Image 1: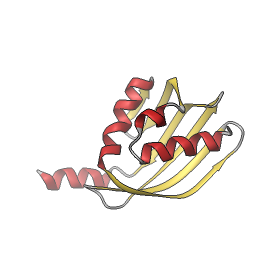
Image 2 (image 1 turned 30 degrees about the vertical axis):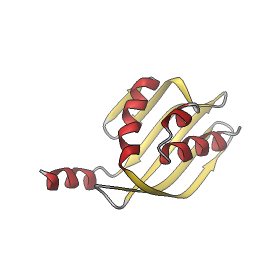
Image 3 (image 1 turned 90 degrees about the horizontal axis):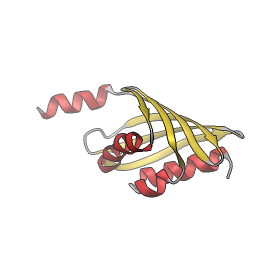
Length: 118
């Protein structure tokens, strides 16, 4: 698989809520840099992505680009608390597994939804 194919397989499974399949495309020692900080290892990464997958009601992939070792995905998600949440990910892929993830998304709508729920 190319880096882009690996990332797309991960993304499709994650957005469908199939975390076990998604993590088959992730290295055990993955490093993820997200707005909340650095996450290391597959157990911490699972704990980070799994709760979000349970909130998802839909997603739309706007674009995906890659080369031999990296890929970039740009997408929108719809969740129960926030109907429109754009995000982007940059993946580094080594030997068919994602080894580094950098996630960019706007946390403000999620913080506003949490504050409104109080």
